Image (cartoon, rainbow, N blue to C red; front, side):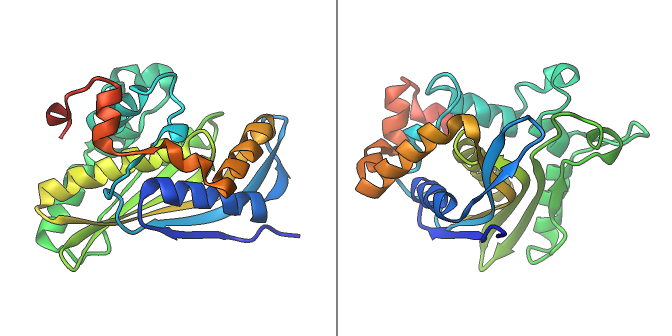
Length: 249
């Protein structure tokens, strides 16, 4: 039996993430992976209607070694703090989006061009940035999961569709969505428009076999509502990690 697609429509990020996990547990199928273990897997479309509405943080979704790791990940995606490690890491999302290097050596700042395009024609269907480099990524053991970002201004609000070929639903998705919406905010500010919805589209939305015990325990917490204790506002999050919110806005 083939997997049934997951479709979630929610107000904020924590609600969208939890609902997507719940549906994955119900709709996903077990599929082999290239890493020698199985995964529960399904395609997914996750729509967050107001991605900056509070509470915006889910503490269970921050899998980065520390709570501050979420902000470091945002800085990696939006500000490129790890771009100097590209040769070691093979890529960073910031490097691919802001400094996409062609085989000829030409470098394209895709996000800058997206902003320029949207300023000229907010309704354009061509404001997108890609990560995939077939001359490199087809032979890579760990190619980029994010494939494409598509931006458009609708009714004066910037929307973002993020297209993923693969996404670890338990250990990566919340942080991905959080960081990509921060990039959405960056583009909106440079275009001079308000923020609209965010859509997260995944070909393989999965949880690896090694994490199934944790995954199903979390599903039970979602069912009982216990998991909502981990939903917190941005200001509460900054207080917990002792960061001045004024410096992060």
